[in-house]
Amino acid sequence: MAEAFVGTFKRDYVYVNDCFSAKVVSKMIPEWIEDYNNNAPHSALGMKSCLLYTSDAADERSSVDLGGRRIMKKKKKK
Image (tube, rainbow, N blue to C red; front, side, top):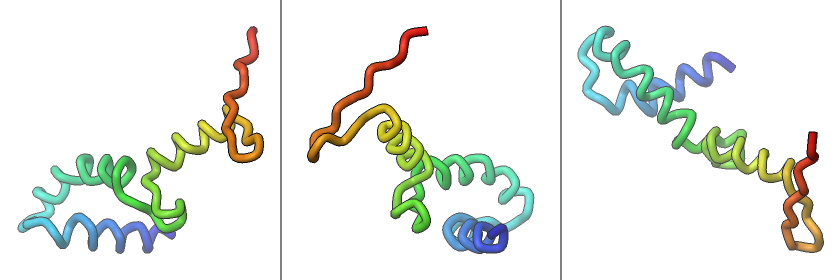
């Protein structure tokens, strides 16, 4: 799994940018990881970004599907 991530990361970020040194790459990694997690589509997540996928999962947990209509669950009072 790590090899797939590294290969994808290199293909989608390192090779398409003008990175002439390891220093430049190191400086860009935090920005690229943020983009990878928040914007890039992932095949394992149905071509959604990690951010959209987790947001949709949270919505699914807080709602119920009633014949094509989504009804929000009431939050439990503590």
